[in-house]
Length: 103
Length: 200
Image 1: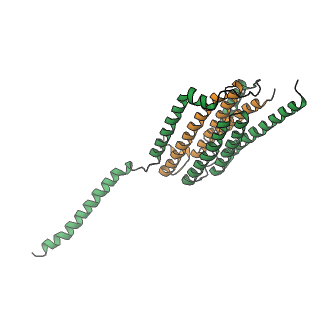
Image 2: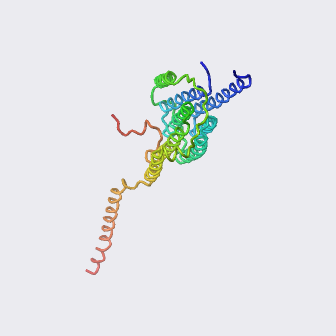
Image 3: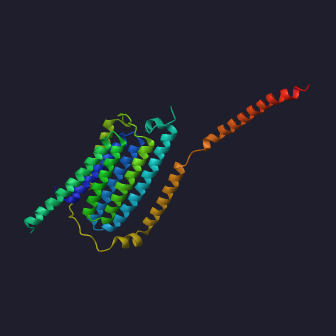
């Protein structure tokens, strides 16, 4: 396989998606869930910029990437505010302890 | 016909990209494995810094700057603030889904990604002539509107969530005030009645 910088960037996308996805599946701490979401979104931004470089329309993908970064930051802020409130009300950050519906 | 210099330069470029992307993946894995939330947030800032260098090398200068200032700066500060308020409690090793299932899903999705996007034959492209300002303000005006709405709703949501919760306490406070008034009335009766009785 011809290893060019773009292929390395795409391998990076795959690695970051794998790390973030695995973390999202296994972690039970609310703040860590937000951190793993950040890693997933960073992988998406790297994919966007790489695609922009491949297609030669880097400015279009840059403006999309800026939108993604803004949305991601808002998600992180709201997620952490939720985590703080849940910690105050329930007393834990463990996602398994949050459900009050016991079957 | 490429000369040896250009070949060496291409190899060096590939090596630089490899080191940066490899370090970013390493930081992401360390962020996943870290025991304390604070270390996890710092490793996340490391991912952000390394990726912003990659963005700069790919020619996306504006996104590199925004990623460095927002991703590595603002978000890290927010994480440290949230961790200091909510506490850095360690939650046990037991995972949300069984670990073999998680590994299976991750490997499956990774293989799907490899199948669909690799390998790319195109070389690194040169940057087109239009400027980001033109694209951003003229072609992608909708994006700008979406960002404004997002920031506004984010601030509103934050204010709403972080406001002190008072509503659930109102009923019990009413009961408490009523009980206190009742108690005061009884005390008044006990103190007033002897005064009335004493002259007789």
